[in-house]
Length: 179
Image 1: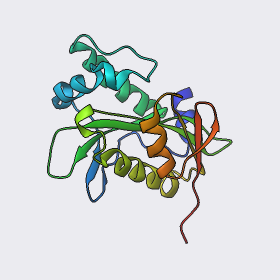
Image 2: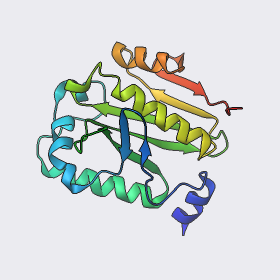
Image 3: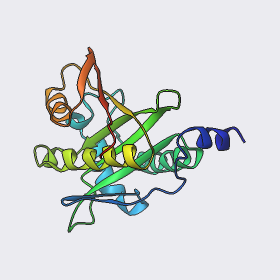
Image 4: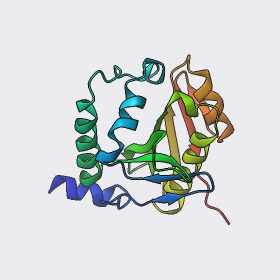
């Protein structure tokens, strides 16, 4: 019951994840068929360096992660997509929205990508799709991102996307409705 109320309060979050299509990437639900690609991402120490989680050391951990992603979606607490380049079926990263704040119409954005995708522009395209969805479908007015103070690559990307540093490791972007 409480999770149903939360879902109503939190911008009518979907209980099934919509596919979001851009020119270079698609955001879609993660599936068990993605386990190998996801393990490559989440087991890489360089990818996980600026997160608060240790790299996965067991492929079975991906199954637990996928269960958690699904549970949080159904509860209306988190939306987490696989980032897939157009023309491919293999995820190169993940991105999502979580920590929704109804009173501020705000959510936190998070993302990870495999090293081979760094600098490709795919993450920037994915976060752009996510931002449009957050603004136009969910009706959010702000996104925030916690970015480690040493993660210069992420800082540059989020700055190019219009986020501004508001604290040592906190970045924010106002989402203005398009005319």
